[in-house]
Image 1: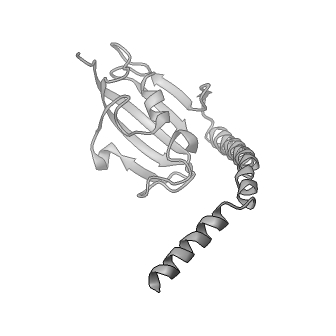
Image 2: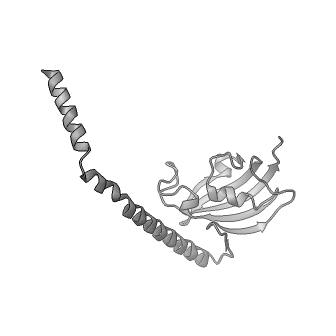
Image 3: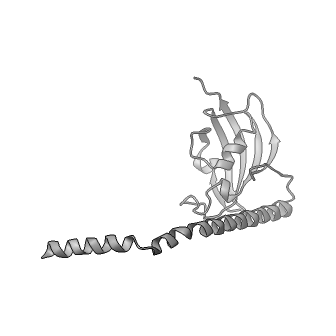
Length: 176
């Protein structure tokens, strides 16, 4: 008897999953994507406004890259610019727009990364390529180039704009 009930249940599930209403549900994915794109554009615009207000309030001289990274290069440094697979050692301070310090080399130690392979923020990866050994800069990284809608799960909340102050201690070119 239990086998008959199981077979009947499976037949009912199979029959109801093939109903014409399921096609309508699949067609709703199009407008959902458009709504998500609109929401993303809204967030990007709001983040640009927040960053613009911060720059104005602090009277900073920043430049925006085509990707949305804001930067001020205090000193470029010497030697060659780092690229993929190059090791970069840096002193840094990472804070939020409200001034809350999240991470700093003074407390957490210098950051030692391999560009293109380390799990660092996309905006930081872009910015470090503008500096050489001894270089100093400030980067303002919007959420879509940092930790996005989730934050880092530790000290950086969701949708946070990050402010990095960087000093490159060393760039080691990748040896193949």
